[in-house]
Length: 390
Image (tube, rainbow, N blue to C red; front, side, top):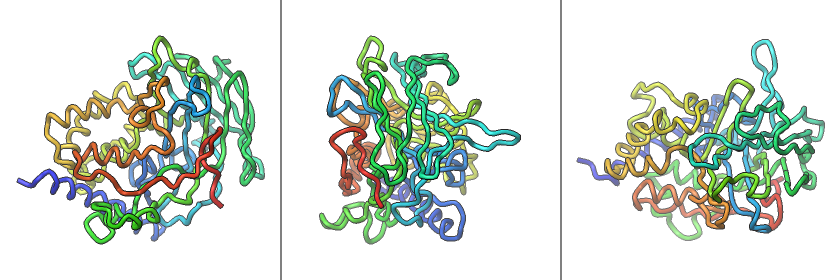
């Protein structure tokens, strides 16, 4: 029987092959993929909804470094569209509408909050954007909506303002102790994609090489994303406890386009994922859109088997380990204690090395790191994410 490490390497080699295929497709004009926290996770290595404007790359939740009574939430979209895209990438606006057959539908960016542990939305921060101006700025609105309330309700809080124009000084919108920013920022995600592509060859992230061989191989260095950043009193999110769950989603009124909680859950575990036994050659139907359209409350029932299969066949974990990890990974929600400044897996701070944490956890220590440190030049004040690259 093959050893767990052999199975792990075989799985990672399959993942590398999938990404390499995406690179080749990108060079030929087809859809490409950059395997990041949650980039391009629809079937065929494409963005959910067909546009990177509605493809969530990362979400973050952390205690404010300037006010311990506040929570900072961030949702990023408009990430790298393909591995062949030259940094920093083109300037992209937020989506205001998505053309559908016969009519246009308004897009809503959501930060969902569960504050009683049942994996159901209790509070929702719903953000909408207007038509882009010539400079890339857009009128915006954020509502904090209670359970059962729709986008057209007055909401608990209603804040209106503007996103930041391309290349401009950050526009910070304020109301009732809430700060809101939307605009281009440096992509805070860091990962050795070339080392991943060469998983079994020279320059592999396994073993890492010399201390200076990997910082320059952060594939996401110098790239931009579009960020929605909100800082608000934690009391607006919590109920009876300082602990909440957070996940992001993008929606048109009757359809959820994409969702994300913890990094890489959808890209690594949901078929067709790059690890055995769910490779495309096995003929297994893709569940990517099923996952993106579903809600966390149903994750254990719908996707537990997929998590366990991938952990056992792809990472060589025992049945006992796989079941315990499935209970930790699902539902796909970023759990966060608003009273704690600790990082991932308690929420997620901008500089948290989530790849190292997850590689170490899933491989049972066989691959503890990709050896890539953060390249972020974060700000000490809101909106905290670094200025966009030019």
